Image (cartoon, rainbow, N blue to C red; front, side, top):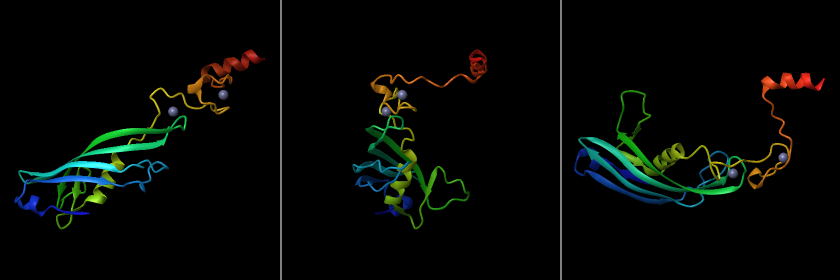
Length: 165
Ligand SMILES: [Zn+2]
Ligand SMILES: [Zn+2]
């Protein structure tokens, strides 16, 4: 969907509403497709003193396996997309800016780019998730598995070697 930003750049309008429910179930992120439910976007693109800025709120339901125990975990995230939109830039530093050609904003592309950058890189069923035992694979959230922990402080391993003899 192309959004015509000419009224904002020319000053004939000072804001454009954005309200969109977008299916992004085909988005791949960290090896899965976490956005199974449509993403809700709402906000506005406004022009203030000649500066055009997108201020869009984004609601996503993120469902993917927990990073540690692999249990399917659903979480809701809410984040804000705040970007300055320019028609051209003199430097290569476009990190804070979105450059539009012909004053048309490709809203789909914009959403994909911005949402991918805002998605969490850590996804846990709970902050304190203990994960799975590296030896037997038991879910340690359900109790200890009884495996001997083999991790030994490297400073102590030399001592352990001595004691074995
Ligand atoms: Zn977990
Ligand atoms: Zn174990």
